[in-house]
Image (cartoon, rainbow, N blue to C red; front, top):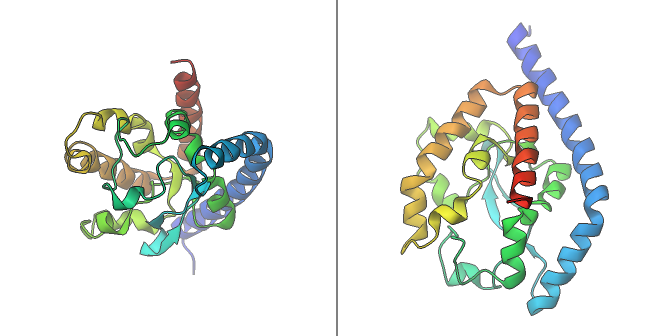
Length: 213
């Protein structure tokens, strides 16, 4: 027999999925003109693919390919590490603008609609990073990864933090990763629909601030 905690969790997941489906569908419809323009610009710059289909770790530790606008040269993974600073030479001209305004994340609405991601949830990581997680840290994978979360808000300028580093990924592991994991675990432990709404509104506010910054 279900107790009150089980009922709350089931209701929360149901509300979250309905919200994800509705918001991602309408988001893709409303943003379609912008998405088409960005896609044309990316394709026109170097003829490469529009999307970067990176392999990430999601719910229950299962890997999936996410949708993001490609902001780097086509062979970026072969000529550099997984962390990217704002002065990374692999970033294309169009990519610099797309990354600045977080437009590269918008195609992940497709992942939300498909059910592999959520609007709010811990940002998905690459397998090589996940392999370094402790059992406690792997609790992060008890929920779907998301487009935004507390760590995304705190490190919205991650590329700027890594700027000038001789080894951006090593800097990421020392200066960003520990706090990012702490915030993600905190979200998992205290998640609620109200928390999700707070994160969404704070994210929208941060995007507006970036546009006027």
